[in-house]
Amino acid sequence: MTVPAMPRLDPELFRRQAHQVADWMADYLRDVSRYPVQPSVLPGEIRAQLPERPPAEAEEFSRIMADFERIIVPGMTHWGHPGFFGYFPANTSPPSILAEMLTAALGAQCMSWSTSPAATELEQVTLGWLRRMLGLPEGFTGVIQDTASTATLVAFITARDQALGRASGRAVGELTAYTSEEANFSVTKGARLAGFLPERIRLIETDAQAAMKVDALEATIAADRAAGLSPCCVVSTVGTTGSTAIDPVPAIAEVCRREKLWLHVDAAFAGSAAILPEMRWLLDGAEAADSLVVNPHKWLLVNFDCSAYFVRDPATLLRSFAASAEILKSVYDGTGVNFRDWGIQLGRRFRALKLWFVIRTYGVEGLQAMIREHIRLGHLFASWVEAEPGFELAGPARLATVCFRRVSGGNGPALDPDALNQDLLRRLNASGKVFLTGTRLKGRYVLRLSLGHLTTTEGNVREAWETIRQGA
Image (cartoon, rainbow, N blue to C red; front, side):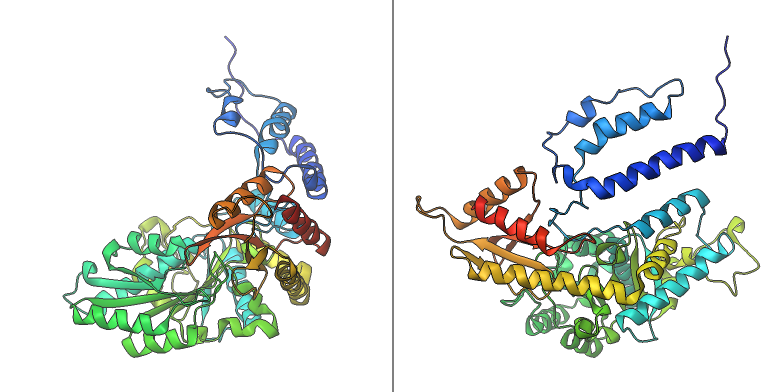
């Protein structure tokens, strides 16, 4: 009977395979436009090509790569495709990819200073860089979470614990939370996960620009207090996912100061634009917030995942999340930062490395130039929509996301506007040339074109517009 071979490390074999993978990655980045943006597959088709049982014996790497290229790649939606304008930017870049490879090679667990001293201190430095780039005051301290969803959940938990500690005898079921009706769905989900009852989560009405109405917020808080409830926290949004609407954060911050409520600013999507001096106004009022999140993995060329969470008082994080065991204790616990105590996860990846690589490779000025160009292209696309008969803008195009819709079906029978735009979106995405997403603003179905990729050019945007016009 043959004894199965035990896995062993073969550095030279790894070297050859790594070169093969690096060549594939470089070719993919160069040639991604050859693929349809979204695959024309149905649920279950990919799975049907894969065996139900794992292989009992080792397989050749060449065979694994062949199946990757034959089965997996054609079944992917290509977020880095020049025709991808859906959802939001989910960027990557060569330095970020290289740093991710180094992170995988190091295999570090970055839960405390003693487990990875360099990872901990690099995270402190790079978050300090980003804070300065965004124009946030020195009173904020940053930590990397995996996503904005997690950062928002962390904000809710800290706000909850602070409120319960301040009002002894209160129960979490009496706490209320407030956010815009246009806020990302992860906000209400995070509130529920933090223990807020669904009926205590208030969705505040928005104005014609899809921004939170401050008078509606104040009235809702007053009504809750009159009902004997305990208002706890407000989540304001700088750049909603649907239309990049911007809540009036300075006015909301004043309400929170007066009412003694925690203020969390969700700037995950649009916050990166604040690295431009002319766009610094986006974060006006954020200096008065208790916490804020910006996602470098959306518009700063850092591949997923890397979410920067800034908090005014790190002690609030420690009160909610600090926990230890004998095996985790270290002689450096009093002097080194243990980021495991700054969020939900105990185990943490070395995410700061790719942020460091990106900022050093492109420099602040290079990143500013890219975002400035994306905003210019967004404004240019909006001007084409405004000038085209049968189309209209569905909201202000402040940044690089443009909401628009078809308002005329041409010479044929009159169609329901929502159905007209849903059909247009279906046909556009089926073409394989472009990928857009739709949303509802004030009950109307609209299309969204969202810019923000490293390789996006004016030619790509012009081609997308021609495809849209032809599809209409």
